[in-house]
Image (cartoon, rainbow, N blue to C red; front, top):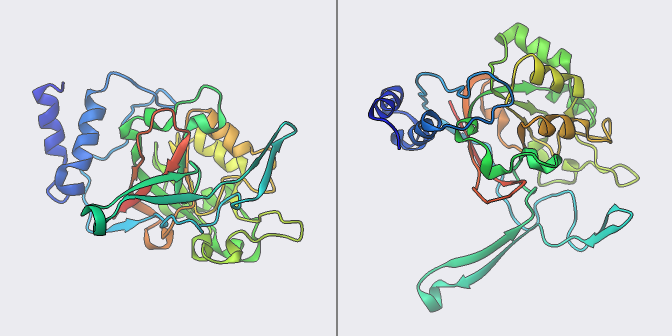
Length: 296
């Protein structure tokens, strides 16, 4: 239970224009302030929230998930994960009616999906043996300053372009230092192609070609800027330039998390927005589809 002075402090920090009329962020801030647990990647303070979160506009950074949404695997395709692991890929997402309006005067569905489809989270557990699952991520780490790195120009010329350390230095020269404990998102422009074959950009051997992140840039964000989370508008933080999935193993293995297949990054500023992650709290999950909002 929160002490009265903590509740009052939270109340004063949230303005009338704050998220969900002071319900969403207030609840998160209160939980953060009252928590006795910390799972921050470093020893810096666990809250990166500003003293006051005000906004005039909300941008949805989420794609609508449906059964034909592009994914790593295709329904019915035989997938070989290792020498001893082969399986037939099921549907990306299934929505089956349980009750329907005409007969029951109520609508209710049974929904099943792969964890890592659509706009979704990669929790530390996804690429580490003992990393925290999505439900264990502290709520204060789901509301973060947002920094958007635009690499659309070079991605238009090279589908395997990567966000590099040079891109980060150029961004900081223009906008100032990347905020501590932020979410840094790569905007390659790939979200515009999500309903077209270009989103996968398959080569002649059937390999996917999409922009991603360079491990040097990611290590800089981890060690020099203490960034909490990464975001990309493509399938993955890694592409063919990092076949060993270096970014995934290093970033998630360090207790950090990320978002993949983001949408509408062109509609948010390079700096100044606050990102809010609506992650289902499913015990033991390695991630899963989210509803991602940017407050501007």
